[in-house]
Amino acid sequence: MINTRDILETIHMVTEEHLDIRTVTMGISLRDCVGTDIDAVCQKVYDKITRCAKDLVSVCERIEAEFGIPIINKRISVTPASMICDAITAEDVSPIARAMDRAARDVGVNFIGGYSALVHKGLTKGDDKLIRSLPDALSTTERVCSSINVATTHAGINMDAVARCGHIIKEIAYRTRETDSFGCAKLVVFANAPEDNPFMAGAFHGVGEGECVLNVGISGPGVVRAAIARAGDCDLSELAELIKRTAFKITRMGQLVLKEASARLGISYGIVDLSLAPTPAVGDSVARILEEMGLETCGCHGTTACLAMLNDAVKKGGIMASAHVGGLSGAFIPVSEDSGMVEAAEKGVLTLDKLEAMTAVCSVGLDMIAIPGDTTAEVISAIIADEISIGVINTKTTAVRVLPVYGKGVGDSIDFGGLWGGAPIMPVHNESPARFIGRGGRIPAPVHSFRN
Image 1 (cartoon, rainbow, N blue to C red):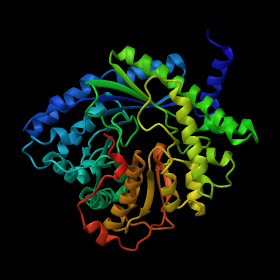
Image 2 (cartoon, helix red, strand yellow; image 1 turned 30 degrees about the horizontal axis):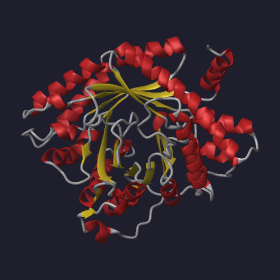
Image 3 (cartoon, rainbow, N blue to C red; image 1 turned 120 degrees about the vertical axis):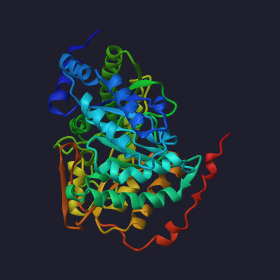
Image 4 (tube, helix red, strand yellow; image 1 turned 135 degrees about the vertical axis):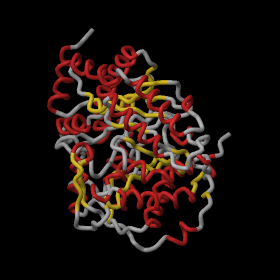
């Protein structure tokens, strides 16, 4: 039986507390697009994407109108594109990215992810070609997002790939220098990348997935913050229970949209990602949740403990609301996309070192952090290595999305607008890790990975 109070509560969450479906993401396999001729492959890629996703946007818009639930983004993820690059004879595979971009534009989605490579143990010819193409691909496309998985708990860390990523990120920053190095916002470096993540820029359609599948990413930091504010000075056990109940309600809405969209599109439904994804809008901030829990400013001592409790409670509540939970599922802490994080960073309370500590308990990692444009490739690689190590040792997903903003330094800021937001340039440690990064090779898997 439908409860009138629950309906009214959901309406209030949507209208007053920024509750939304952050993304409906269609995953599409491109494994049947393989070939030797780059032009033929590009045509297959374009045709497959547009055929599968032709109704995605219109179906989501009808669900929005009928249910009154905002669906902010409609997106596509594809099989890691490096997998269809191995047989291509051309050295430049960036036309595939442009074919993906054209297809995304023509079906009307916001972003398309999966111009990606999985290189946690080594590189194939296709991986090498794709990584070399990233500066060109990400500087000449609008909607294409990319990711590189450089480590897993079971494989260890491919430090050759980590070292290379530092140089690639620097080159992307230079190629997109006219837009404050925005191209770097479309590249994520992962450890333990999930194969069913609906969020950008790290989404790709995993090799264990079916032909075509639908995943949903929910949001609602404002709903959680408001619930905590109403609770007043309750103890932490009661607070955890409150967050669990709130996450349950948010996730049920995501489950409803996922099932409805799947039925209307006639494709399999995959997972609901429970993540609290902030936006620059006032009232839609993970940092404000932590402050409502009792911190004066996000980044002060106690922040990691608050974030750990929040993340755990969100997972416990959400997992009871859906039979299939996946993706990243937790609290995101992207600096530029969270107004509270930006304010804390501007005060100097939230630092890169504190953010790194927080990533041990959040759902992703160092995300959307602007750093000085003159930061060396080796320092960027070392930042990646530090963060990836947290993921490998703790058997969790971690990621790095840093933006060395060309021509800018500490004291400057960037403003991308929209969901990307803006942020101050944060200082880094410039003492050189070059000798360590230059050693290359692989950091072996941790001992606790051997469980068979």
